[in-house]
View 1 (cartoon, rainbow over the protein chains, first blue to last red):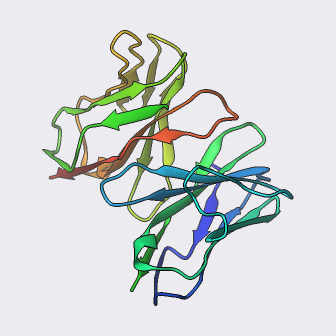
View 2 (view 1 turned 90 degrees about the vertical axis):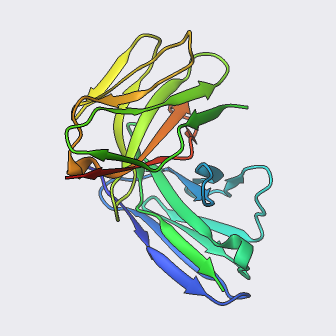
Length: 114
Length: 112
């Protein structure tokens, strides 16, 4: 089946640094990718919808200047957490929609900000 | 807005036990309902889905029936295996163009 590769799977960083998470669709072109975040004991919450070649659409309450999303090609979207702080520590997961509108998920990134 | 509520975990069962993970939803109209599974170290995978009331989704021995009257989509399996240990997410979506709304996930551990 289709595969979405997400890296890194785990990252620990110091407060104030920026972290980039990559999401790649390995065997299909994804015009749309979604970024989710999950805090402990909470639901997976949609952060933003990323369309290739255009600006991402952010959900209410998500700071677009803090969570930079780039979808420069049909197979790659990146999420950059800028100036990360401990409250940004969370599980981030991407999903990509294939041309048949099926969704495939990455394996997620556990971010810990010290 | 739309929301999905699923039972708190973790759930620990012995092999061959019966499994039920409850899921209820709040939504306008008639959403499609899904169960996703995440095995350790892997991405979420679609386990089964149902697109209209009374539909039953099934896969790998798991079943769930779309109950409009109780706004529920409970996941069941008659005899779990150790390999079923994973996190299970209930979700809904109104169409292929709208993103999924997830529950919190339920961690299942099956012991031999």
